[in-house]
Image 1 (cartoon, rainbow, N blue to C red):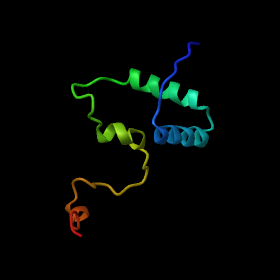
Image 2: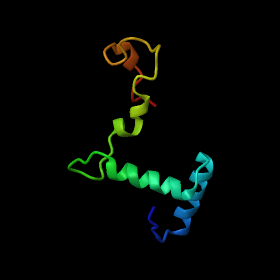
Image 3: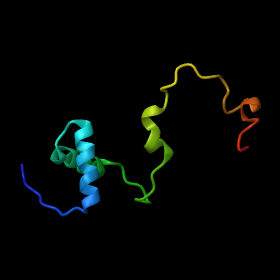
Image 4: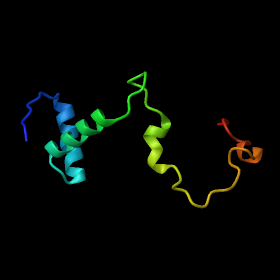
Length: 83
């Protein structure tokens, strides 16, 4: 395995440390996974765009017993947008 040295701002290093401890992996392992994920992700025209599906894709289909017709039954939308 090759070695790579890089400089991080202190706050980013603290966040990296906390994330590594939380996941129970080394900082090096976490950085390797992050780089691999970044490099292997599908490219689109706008590199900074992240869709809602990208952010919550693992939740799609995770609710087994939701009311039917949430998007088509107007009674579920009665209070939508009201404070």
